[in-house]
Image (tube, rainbow, N blue to C red; front, top):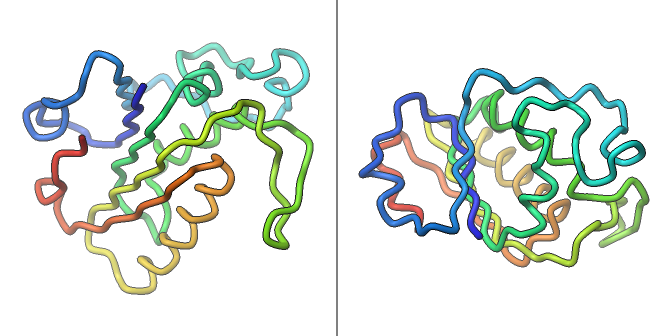
Length: 165
C-alpha cells in the first residue's frame, strides 16, 4: 500500500492522482483533524491507535501496511505545513514508547516490522537555509519511521512537482 499525505487545497486529480493504484490511500485536510494532545493513550489505552476519534486515529495501522509514504507540503520555515505536521504527530501510534540508541541518537523502538520508502516534496519560495533545515528534518523523520530510503525534493510551484508514482 502507498500513502500520500498532502496539503494541496484544490488538487488537480490529473496531476497527482492519475497513476495511483487501488492500494493507495490519500490523506488530505477534511477540516476535522484534531491536534495530538500528548495523552499517551495511543501507547497505553489503545496501543497502536489514537484515542481521538476524528478519522485520523488509524495512522499507526495505515503506516504498518505502508510500503511508500509520500508527502506533498508547502515548506514553512524548513518544516511541513500545519496540516501535514499534525498528521505526522497523529502517526505516533506507529512507534513504541520505549527507546533505543541509533547512531548515537535516542529514538523510539518500532511497533511494526515495516521499512517504508519516505519521500517528501516541498513547494513554495524556499530559501537555502530552509532547504537545509527541511533536509535535516526529513532525515530525522526517516529514522523515526524506520525508512529504508528517505528522499527530499524542492519545487517553487505545485505544478512543477512530477507525478509521484
